[in-house]
Image 1 (cartoon, each protein chain N blue to C red):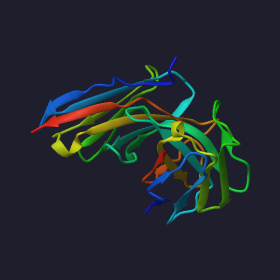
Image 2 (spheres, rainbow over the protein chains, first blue to last red):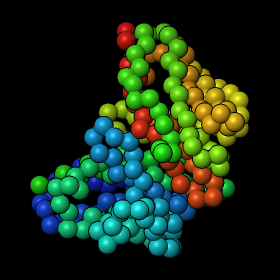
Image 3 (spheres, one colour):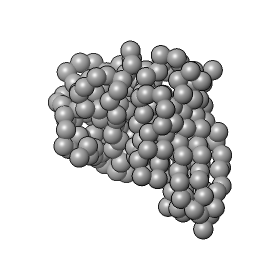
Image 4 (cartoon, rainbow over the protein chains, first blue to last red):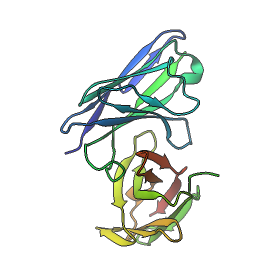
Length: 118
Length: 111
């Protein structure tokens, strides 16, 4: 159980284009999903927390107009990188958290999406 | 001040030995603690979660939590080359339900 999928696993795009990444919880309902970014040899950096049916909460320094997050259902959240530039090239990882007592719940990670912007 | 601190390593141990990974955190309000393993180019996978002071064992893994010292550790017994990875410590703050990750400790288990 607790399987999270991400699509696509790898994407290469031209500078200025937009890229959408999907995150799905396959066998549980996720009231909360998290989006992380990881640069080479660095740890995970939380970008935003997404709660189903409400606006995402972005971390300081993360542009909400550039990284659009939609959590339309209990099993799907999407991250759209708008007008991508080479500095946005990174490993984007989502995680999903089953409903329950906030803070005690584990999060389960998707396999990640490697974005390369040319 | 970083929320969660880990020694970056690498920590090298021979096969069959015990690997000891350590993590300290700054927020005394932290309530949940997690250890993740991350292989190069892959996303993290959960190894252990611990919520109460003391030890929690699962197979070859033992997590230890000391809230008074703000310290959490992971012991890996009978280390195998397949355990070679980066181990991430994560702390969740109850009031905000936000996970803070350490920078990770790279473990090398030598055959």
